[in-house]
Image: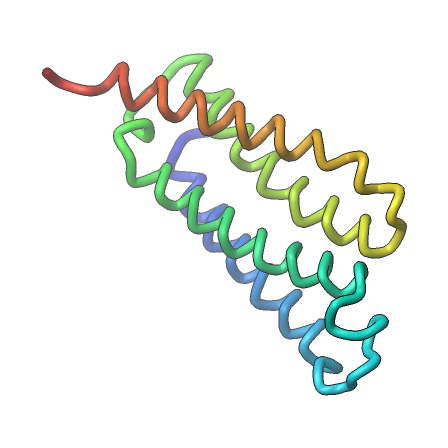
Length: 130
């Protein structure tokens, strides 16, 4: 996988965020929908939809960054971790909306995304010119 795939992947995530937001939005006008505006399940569904959009944009930024020029194992791991975290974060949000016990899984996307961010920083620093 190369960094250019993050660009396409990022747009796909943004579209998934729009689609999931539209689905939740079909009933947003109902006061008690999913337990009301401040209900756990409704908040987690909204968070998952926004996570798709925000993480898609972050992946596109990485694809435009100096990290995108990197190659090798660290670069591959970086690009894979962005994709894995981008899928896991909204998925865990949505699963947690369904069953609150899934909230314990949030460590997985946080670990993937934190690792991706650290690797991105390392790759950018390696490519920096004095």
